Length: 171
Image (cartoon, rainbow, N blue to C red; front, side):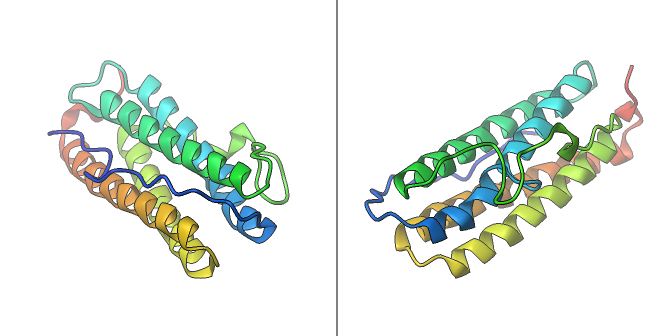
């Protein structure tokens, strides 16, 4: 199975010249809150490490998705700065914590957790897109949503493989 981890479209590079703390507050939870790009990065990197050596390409695919999430993190961080905010690693009300990552080791559980996280991210991004007052932010968010949908599709295919495979146990 080919591991597709992003949509086949370029990322927009809008110039955000208007300062807006309203927009910063919209983006901060997606950037580094409990259910955020920061959490997704660590979820996928952790999953990559604990699945090294399994039959199939799960470990490599999780690493590639982590890199995609890093790109989203970068996009949001730069937007937050351009909007006049500070991209600290935390949501609107607390700093990010390592306990936000689900540290399961079973590949099927990792994949189910990741799919649920991606679906939540899509929902959260759709909410941001609906609430934003800036076209530039909406364009960025809509592009990120495309990747998150690709992640769901890729992870679902991997889940089908590992759910039906006897190779889903860690050595």
